[in-house]
Length: 256
Picture (cartoon, one colour):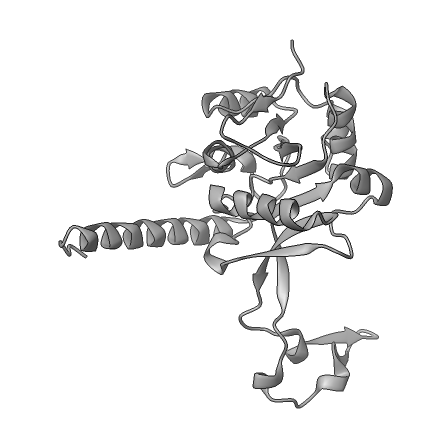
């Protein structure tokens, strides 16, 4: 079986990129999470469709240890040239080890690794293109996706010290008005774009010069529980309704 990766056949990127979609069989929160249905499609399909509709062209591979997931990936146009070794599909396996194994089997070298996890299914092709554009423009070691902290700002937060003693996370900022709070971001897990050389040497996805790509909250759902699935489905339906309203307004018709 060939070890070649699929090539996305649209706009040529100015950097060479290998997209990796990790989709192992095991999952603690939701059984068969990577192929669990979301609005009538397996979770994995959303990431594959986002890759295929991206304007930038790059090689990509689905990494799985499971034949069922492989078949789902193939059904939605993905590429699984080989099954991941079982020793790299355990609960304690670090994703870096999986990437290193893929790079050893690859037929060429790549400037960047683009990690796209199926568990963030609401990421769209425009998000992928935007992250790649940032890497092309700034040539940083990494570009990662973030979302803004809309509530529960760290300046409000406390932690328990010695079991039951409250300590403020940022004690020097106690009592400041909310208007003075700095913009705070959290990594949403949708996009990790990192220079291959940096990843192999530093073993990190987020570099000191990381360029943030900020995504809206409604595309930042990370699936780890049934509640997350329900929230993702809500956002999908909300987007579909908004698109229908916009389409009807353009046609001079208002059905919703």
